[in-house]
Length: 133
Image (cartoon, rainbow, N blue to C red; front, side, top):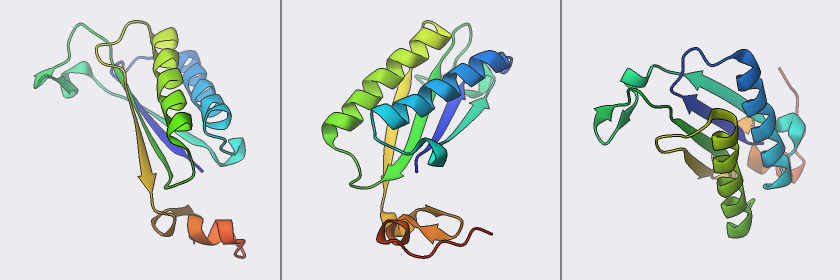
């Protein structure tokens, strides 16, 4: 049940490009991390370069993107995580072009501290009764 937040320093990024990023990252969550497509969320945050800092200075005249992924602790091997990071970096460059940094971070959250619809991942994987609001 990954949650992916993509920050891109282009407030005018076309909707089709955003869709391509969302679809590509969803596919990577499925293929590289073994996640369920239906439980994968991608949020794209478009920001001004002047509010995004590299080396302590606002990024101007260049494009950058950063992907942060929340996954359940222990649900992926080191090799799967490395493959996702490499492939997500390639996807960012393929879709957006050259980037100032092009970062990808995987945040592993304990299954008792992470969930949807009021059900922790711990309970979800134990097969607890799930009642969506």
